[in-house]
Length: 495
Image 1 (cartoon, helix red, strand yellow):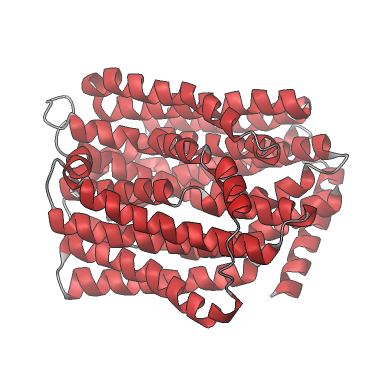
Image 2: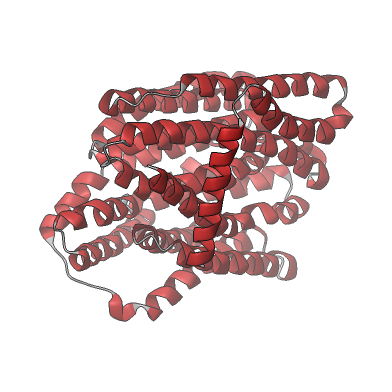
């Protein structure tokens, strides 16, 4: 078990570096966006981002996830790796062709749904961004399936540099506004995928097998609505705010305010959730076949809770300061909404942790059924709460839906695998978090000017309380130091 945990955290650490480069442009560019766009226009930019990812997730047909699963499990059971690669490649190209047909045929309803029927030119450029994202996702899935974390990191670094360059060039130098942002997405994601494909064109396999194609679709197609439901849970608040923007309780700038808080809360996704999801998506499948799978999942949950809550405190502190430092005017209204959104994203850690059991057993239909309850909460709650409570209602609905999503997945996963949590240790972690966070919230109300000092006091108090409660004992610390030495020693070897 120790070897599996070391491998998981080692790969997570490498992927963290790559994901920081891959996603960091979204955060480093915030001061540029906030200085150029007013909140209403920034909200429109965020809606284009939502549109691009909805179309990407739909017309990639969940093939990136399916390829990782088949490469890690089914290839070992007799499926030819070359035929799997060729079949997935052909199906992906077919998805891109279908994307073009749908966007051309349903331009009016799609444009109305996201943008009120406006911006036909930007709609067309967004279609190019969808194609670039699909190509990038397929490339990333190939590297993940092969466990090539270092190559993944190098490619992500190139994408980061290109996105930064094109955004600055198109927005600051050319003054192209929203159009420049979309062109940056097209070029920043498309160029690395094309270059990598050109370099490795000889290794590509175009062999197509209809039997494997049916198996891929049987596994992947239920994941398409699952992915869309999960994305809707994240994006529904902005879509409802856009729909109700003319109400006095909401206002035209509400989407931009929620988008600002959401971009800051996404830091938690960057440094905690996404690296774990990326590594656990294939290493967790390997763990399920081990006789000590229950113990591995229990230990992983304990450390996830510790890391996730500490990351939450970091995001809560740093995120507020980012808005205070770079935000202007109405952007400061986003401050109260960073914490509830970050808490919602924290739930994704435990969703992905338990979801691996269902993925490993090919129960993608069950995953879809589980997703219906949080989807209903987001849909009904958004329709009823957002017209009355605006951005605050959107945050409350989001947090509730994400908590239900993670909880139901854990219950079903526990029923299938029967893992037992380390309840005493989990209780100590929760108590060590609740005390400084609760006291910190009271301090913010009394002394709003001391946010930074109070935030860092919370960050320091959390591990100190863990030690005081007997969680970070000498034995635990020795085990963590040993684990750290193995992680960084292996990192040096892979680099």
